[in-house]
Length: 278
Image (cartoon, rainbow, N blue to C red; front, side, top):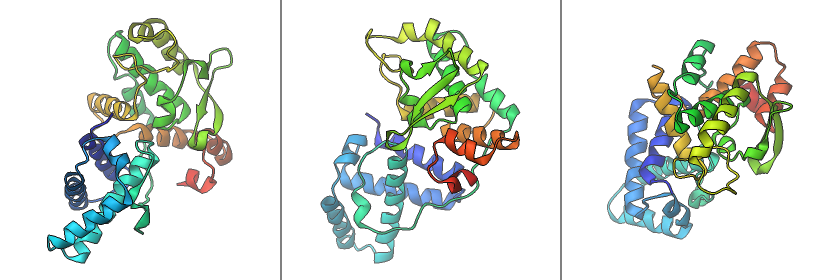
């Protein structure tokens, strides 16, 4: 379960890092979504999934009765729709009660990427040989080595790794399977975690998840975002780094190294090559 406030922070971080929105726009989004969450009594992701279109109509009517101008109500709906689209894209909710309202598409711009020196600093940020440090180091290595989405990494099971042939099996959107090769550095990091980190976190012998929390459960997307941002700050990279930053960096470095666009498209799991071209 994820607190709605934490999900809002992730969304606003995305708006800064991926969409390049101004500080004023970010503040407006925050106010609009906070007002919506309070008005709907939504405290966590389960509440957000339980919201219906009928309740949304009630919210709009309440705004009208409170004297809000139609443009102000529309702006709030746009903000909340962007919030839900982000949550859906990240797999943090499964339903969108705002599908009955038509709003603009998400802004798109060239994604931010890290240079190779910055990537090295991030990958080396997890300190110590404790189970969580080993887990975070392995997770960062796999994110960069495979270009996996946050949800794909959290969904990895131990059986999705093949050390003999050095590849990882990822399940993308609509559970589409793809095999991605990984380098020695990532393999060694995962081996270290499996040998010395995961056993200390394991609570159920039959648990299939590769990356575990301190309570032995599958690592969540929210927790992964938090750990990536924590290590990015420790590496002096600021607050704008998130799992997708490593995905974009992976693709950019492959292309700059001479890989063809179609191969990178396959490794990223993009159905449309125009997405890879961004």
